[in-house]
Image (cartoon, rainbow, N blue to C red; front, side, top):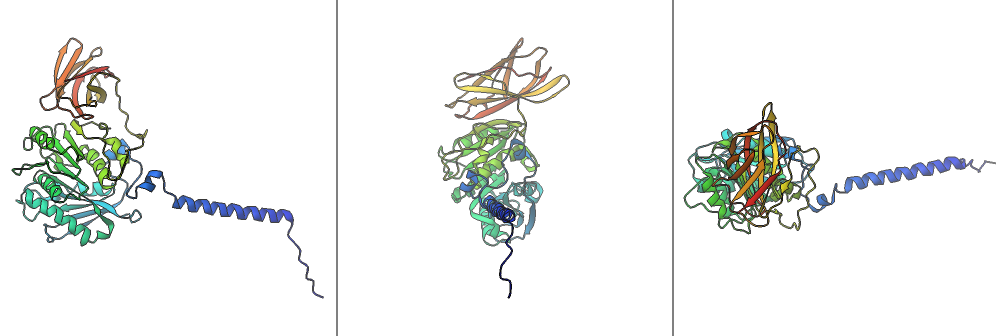
Length: 427
């Protein structure tokens, strides 16, 4: 007669088996939740956020975190051809895009091509626009910028990588003027950057509705600081805007690779193309890294559409440290100091003057020099000294500062750097 009884496993063995199965199920469930869950509440709210949390150092780096590739665009489609730079990563969905056009008589390939892979590595698709003729005026360059964006989003080989609702324009000199005109013609654009934008007769920002950053050079003899002051002053108060003047920069500064302009325009594009408020910390309430900037006027806070409050994370501890002295609280303005660099027997310092809750029309900063210190050169202000007492008043072009805005003056000095206590007075 067959034996129908089984030999049951010991109770201890059965218990271990059940425990192992439970641990396996919990581990798999946790892994699935980790994959499906967003890395942060902010990322869940913003599907356009790209890349790791930024720092002062990462924004100023010559490359971002994304690998890039490049395509050549033949002439036609309403512009003279050009180049497309894009992130190769396909796991983040579509990307915001920016079209860049050069200045009068220039080629993108000669003057702005350095910007293509740089911006693409930070998570943007870039189309560098060659004009139909090198003598095209600002009006034609505006037309070519918009034609290039239409080609990029509708017919290019990377059109499936681009979000057609998140587009920006940028240009230098006559191309900067074309940028302003393109923004006027297509107010659905999310952002614009004018690099020393030129003067095609009646250029104005009075009707601009596109968030606009204007960047100029302190020593530009072609598009002068006074001209840009007047141009920027015409911006509507309701349009997000930002004005940056680069210390010692001439008109061709923007045609040479540099991170002084990139460390401000990358946050601008991130905020308004990617709705990424992690980047507001670099522009508001003042520049996180004002080195190389002689004048800064902001219209903070910068809030992308649909954003109710800018809640950027605190700057990473890995950011370069800045030695800022405590300012003497005064009505109207405050001043902060940092040492830019030092060497045996000398150093370079920078002072950032920030307006309070109301605009100011002039400022004066005073402090006492340390033992053995003497100032040998100063820029973006007027210096007077009396013994160890230092007084710096605004230059003719740097006195007007909007509420919450900042300007920077710098100096070279003999001696050993120290952290002075600054007093700021406004008028």
